[in-house]
Image 1 (tube, helix red, strand yellow):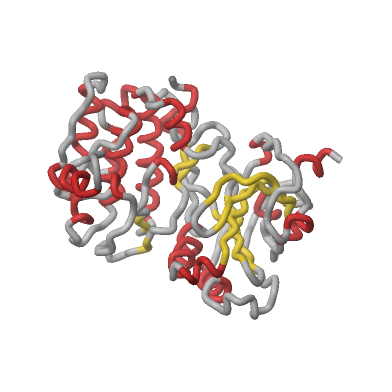
Image 2 (cartoon, rainbow, N blue to C red):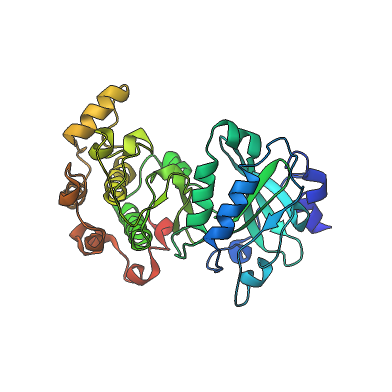
Length: 358
């Protein structure tokens, strides 16, 4: 049977969560992009307290489940139920993380394609990061934007927590950037535009991501950019935080100095990414952490000759030491560099055709 040849049966893969056979990913006509559902933050919190915070020795009741309430048709109907691993055919690994792996999966009844993030309770508890998982579930399950990866639901068993997330067929933006070395300014501008819109949406919901970098950006079926991995994100209506978090090359000066920070840390990261997309490396990269810290604090920007004057102006308006001096996200789409490189339909299509640029 063709389906069996593509996906390993969940019953066979249950112990190791490994594919029973190689997988050829299905076309994204079957992918999860563009669907909608809703999730209760209270139920998410209860899930994590039980799944990640309770008896890691597996003494709790096996195969307890939770999933978001859903409405409407299509993928929503597929995902509006209580889940177990038996409901999925497990495919090939999509990625590996510190606390578990992500697998390509197909919901058996409706053949709906998703990614399944499998996290090991013991590792979560050992690292004392169950609160981060709780935040990730609570925040990501509430977000609805085409440039934000969807979290559809979750369930757990005695040893693991499973997150049902949107499948992004074209994978990590980081791998695409590594493969090409750097992007054309046209393609970079389209990604920057899409990311700015997604960040504006998140900030309107009082969500600060705090770890924007190429590894946390995925590409959908049409090459559209999607923000993923909300493990360091925070819902902060007061907007002022002091936690040092994220990845060194993308940290803003206020974080390095231990000062309060707000949503503008994401704006800084947007500027760092704009530079990295065009040049191929982050702007403050140096030998050793101390040297990198110094360059960030000085905002030591140095542009290679191939970077256009418009791109230099755009990046320089964002990478400002004082958060209040940084370009606002609503001004990104009005900057000449972005306007020059946006396709006519991109303003209404979130630069979905970015991958066609070279």
